[in-house]
Length: 465
Image 1 (cartoon, helix red, strand yellow):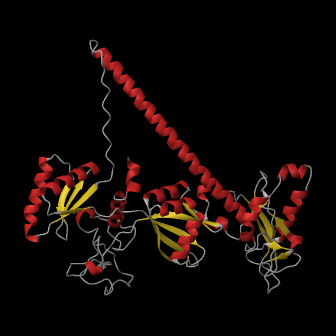
Image 2: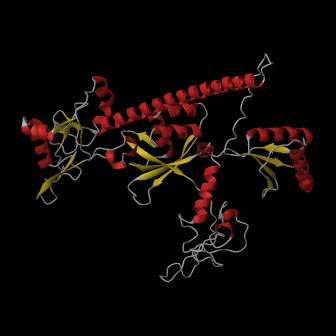
């Protein structure tokens, strides 16, 4: 429950209202739930140990309205204990009705107004009828609340590991049962045979993502013959291939449905075409966005803070896994908050998912979103490259699809402009309701490219297995 009321900025008395502020699910806690203004009474459940207070002591002294030796660290009120709230878990005191240091009025970031504080104190001291009607309210500080959420995330991770082990055991038991049933069937159909061969192991299931092999020829003039030789190797050795094409660099690209097909192709090409170089494209890794950061951290400082708060991720990074903060910038809709773009490995992305898609930093937690960045050219408006790499000789406007640059569009600032996306005007993305610009984030062509990018990243594509 949270109380709202007290005195406004002009000193006028306001009313008290009570509303339910208890999160329904730990994974859906909003970013504002851990703000300094949050007043969070909860039902009495357990007490905190002295070791917990010692670990959190350094953090508590910097918290909003923390009372030390009877003085509020925010408004410097030496009589702060007269209107203090005590955290039920760590037993620390906080100034409930904090005032501005230079003005005699209630601080805008006050934990709770004076009127609600009085009602809260009265209800805790009430006996008899009122006690049974309203129950007992308890105050918990932000630091203890965050510590509790971290423990819940670790507990959830342990439960997931336990479920995985039980599923593996169940799968093995079903395979053993299948083998016994196959033996019984063979005994009934072949009664004269004394030995029953064990059933063949099932063929491995191909992953939903595909394996790609790139082959480069030393002699550009032999590219046509090299393509024919590669096609012959694929045909003679019964190697499965989804498609074969030549990229802009003149390299031969073969897309195989499985890793085994790709490795077989590498072996045959190295034997029959030793002059041809083969290599794999780099694995595409998940990119995430961490929202509502309170401070404008540098990339290095933010990475160190996140690794310090997540020992499991730090251990994986030391083993070679990827966890790299690419950039930190202000949010578009709320410039007082910042967001970070982070490249992570598939295993680290799974750990973040088990934590409810949240990362912890200091005494706060931040929501994590998946990010799929698709390259789009500002010259031809096509996907997969930027303007500096564009080979088109003519420019296409991103506003009206006519033959001029977007910067020179005469209609872009007029009210009569009718937007038209060039990518939705032709080809496989053709759309009759084409009334948006080429750089609209809801463009059907752009969304389709994002979905295609999603399928090329193992963490997302493996969920379809």
